[in-house]
Length: 423
Image (cartoon, rainbow, N blue to C red; front, side):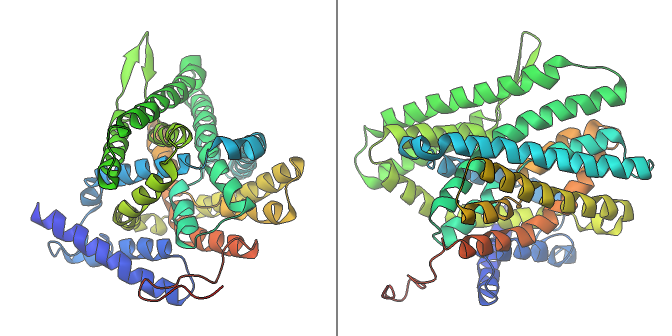
């Protein structure tokens, strides 16, 4: 136990120190946290096998998954705060259209690129693997995007649309992956299961939204019995932990495997709560401040979990580079086309696609599910490679796009030790 506590303390301090380095080269703090994780991970300092100094193995990092899952729950809860009815009335329909189209177009572009690779070099990648990777490509990481927005206090039409699209992307990606994975399984073993392709993903989405809504109403009801800020904060934290825990429950009903999506369930809890509680905005700000150390640990652990051994595999690099290039093109073209279709402002049209590039936990979860396919190992390694690239460059690209769109204000408070600079 003492080794884990020391390791977490070193991870937290190391992430904070590295964020100072990245700040000097004008890169987001989240990139510093990820680099700190790589340095403290089993392929660098962790390889020294000094107890408490870094993480000596990938298994040790995985054993701390409760921290990453909890952090994702709070991140999703915070994103739910973006779905206020006043905002949805103005941009909700357009955000849904963009969220669906950009995900589908990304999947199609990656599918075409990887299937073409299979037709040219059948031994490198199979059709089921190509289809599965195309579906995984639709997923976007909400955590990195949210951290960049929070760090630079970005605000404006692009930022608000981005947060909605990132949230919608999880549900859309889940459906696309379930359908594609079902087709890939059918091609691999010759059996088609409509339950796995259609019914189970829809059940997961409906259960997650329903349970999340119930938790949001309950949080609002229970919160009314407390009046001090500290107690209201405590009950909010307790409900997010409860929701995250319940989202991991799985069961069978009428022959259907039923499960929940952590992101969707916690996001829906935040959505309902922010729309029914009149003081939710002030409470959300306090929750954000409380979970900041948890978010830093999330990214440091994510960096430590990246398996650098995949860089030594030529096939992984070939497929991975094509996957990254085609996914990037798909995200940009999908966002650009859907923004033009919904008549968005030129700044949004030009920059939204770049902000959707980060990819992490959701994609890795999908790759883990796909491990049962014949080329499951290749799928996992390609996703690991892409996450390594996207997580290191994605946050900086998001920052640059928001800056170019004029939604990051270079003025304002720069240090808690100084007064706000005059505007």
